[in-house]
Length: 366
Image (cartoon, rainbow, N blue to C red):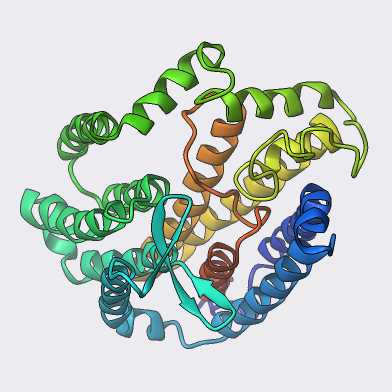
């Protein structure tokens, strides 16, 4: 009789460590001039990124060694805690306002972003929900209405911050889980039309989002306003060519491209390391996706399979949106690139999620 593997998927580990290495190097390269100007330390952001990467890798390996039943039993309490944190963020005096969004809670010298952790909590909870209701997932109430109500409630709290980017990734991941659980296709088609209408409504409700849409269609209509970020991003990607300008040689990071070490780090990567560097990063993401889907297909338990699909889907959606934004394929949203962009909560959460994926890879039959 086949036995579970004794070790996690080493290909996933290799891809993650390679992405983290590229990320730390690029965070330093993209932020050195700005951090020296602001803090007098060109390594300011790089050191913090390395700290969070080290913490995340430590947690990743800890999580990979847990009893996998732990995730099933704690899925419900985890989501409840995340809902409480999402509410706490909205309370004046508790939530920290940054760039127009009240999305952070301060803890000492650091801060956390509850919406990031909510993405993983929703994956675990919906996977548990579908496993417990496996025989009714093809009904509208159990297969569509209930899970959408859960994810939609979290989305509503995230939008009150507001944070459309994180909310979009979370809802996209929820749809992946609904599909993987076996919900009827006709319900998903209806959901798609409802989602398009809802997204249009959210865009129309905020003037700055309308400007982002129009800037996406023609950034040169407002080159110093709504179209500025996309234009500067394309100015970074274009000159990169095949080999790039060389590591550390970016021009756009010198106060031309906003947030070069966070949302637009892929632009700096393409500028300095060219098509080969950008292609290498995309290849590593592709390897991670391939192995994640392999885990989802191979594990014998429905809960494990759905969690693996959800974690993989979350990373795919976030990476595709970020790369699409910086290359002009999608409107500008505040979504970081997993493993590469600077950010403590996002990086730590994603590495914990990968730890769960590694844990589940142990459950595959040899």
